[in-house]
Image 1 (cartoon, one colour):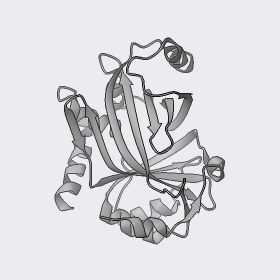
Image 2 (spheres, helix red, strand yellow):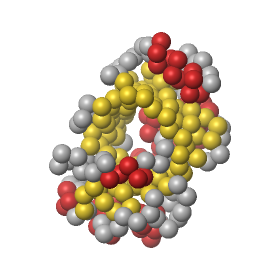
Image 3 (spheres, helix red, strand yellow):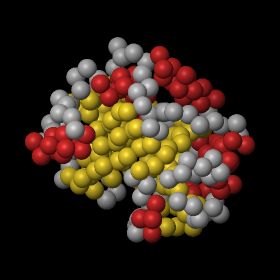
Image 4 (cartoon, one colour):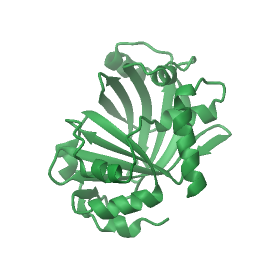
Length: 248
């Protein structure tokens, strides 16, 4: 399904103008929805958000490489609902070539992201980057690459409030010979400093009976790429994606 018309209806904003809503310390509200629901929501909220535009592009391509310990500590803590947990990844913005080592720390319902610029992906962490992870987290983990993912992202910025959101389409996760695709399921994430439920996207989703959901592209990819992992907590999310695929 083409979303070009709906995306083009948003007024543009730039990376420089988006600096006011970096939100490296924030609350996140996520949604899982179909492309058809997304299309109608975008048409409804087009006057309340700007769309990030870089060199004429509004859908931007991302690739990420996630790391975990040999016993999948990060995945397991997410699955078990630990309130204090980490993700470590490298992310490349394919349109610009910029690449970062990122650490996301979830604690007390808030997400803090730290990152440094790197030259490119590393499947073996350099001593410099191991030290950065150790200094940032206070932990000296043995980390290995466990999952790649790719997707296209639309970024919207609220015209008034300190809020931005990301909408990820065409997500696929892979490692070696295994691959899983989420399309036509869409993952949207509203990022705020306050966690208000009055955000235009949240209200539009509510009208369509689309409820917030705790969902992770990383974790959903992991349960298909590593079938031996425990994933009871993620079964409802996996079923929700399959339902979207079935009725698309």
